[in-house]
Image 1: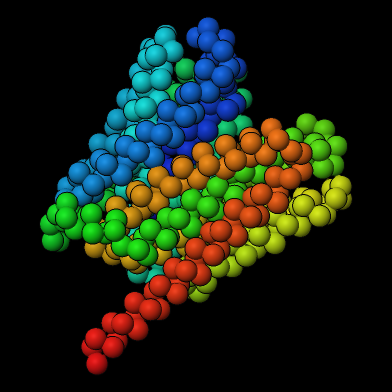
Image 2: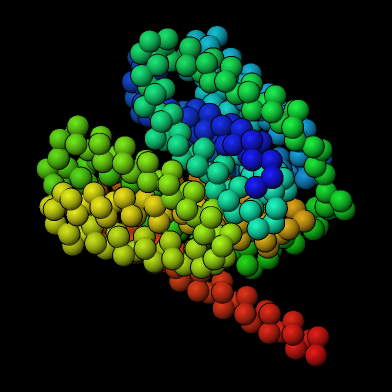
Length: 392
């Protein structure tokens, strides 16, 4: 793979951005106490990051689509670094909330542009692997970034943690400045063309697949701790071990998905990932309290879920090869919306029924994603047939 060092440094940036997004779950009580707000109010720091990334990133990317992607990436990394430094000097909840909006916007754009840049720095047959490496950086923030960041917060304070991550982000910033060439669209992309891309039925179905499979994942994973406690009466230490294994499997899944998408194609990888997800979720619903079985099923489920993401991203890149940033940014937004859908749906399930029903609902949601994928493939075949008939 060409430019492998640059790709891994872009993955480092994704790891740091992901750590900043997810770290709130580990330090939320520290922040709430320090800023004299309730834990539920402090939870807005998670929502503000997600919404600014989901809504703001596609808008900014659409408006700057004809700009040099290197300059956009540099600008977003600089804003991300500065927002972390500003956090250190912020002593009101409102100011911290503002910095979270900046972090979500800059971080969301940076990850999307990093994936788009990565696909242009490597050979065509390695694009899926490049996306997978960057997503590995993002998923590893859950495995290593959050627990390590929570531990460091106890030593240097939660504000000091933001400064530390800001300083480390200077490394990928310098790498982009020195090693990434200017990347600009050869032909100007008009607003009309962007809107036509977003009207493409294939993209609509593709992001719907993202919404529902991420929604299915989030429905169970958000409430995995109470689900495990109800399923096998596990201790917190045992659950922590399972969560660590789950995080490692998400890391592995991102890598496998990228390689499989290159070798077998994105559609094959997406179908395989979705079917495995459904089978594992159904297995969780009927497996009972067998601890070994539960751990094995969760590991396969995590690998299947995270292997789907790079394939999905690569598929969207192939749909819009001249301007992948737009498709990737829209897909990233639907990932965030999927997390919101799943957590809300899971909350309703827990409120009205048993927590053990989560796996059934999760499986049903992923089934919708699978059906959307079948419709997408059918639509593609019909479109291809029409194109061949027109040529004849």
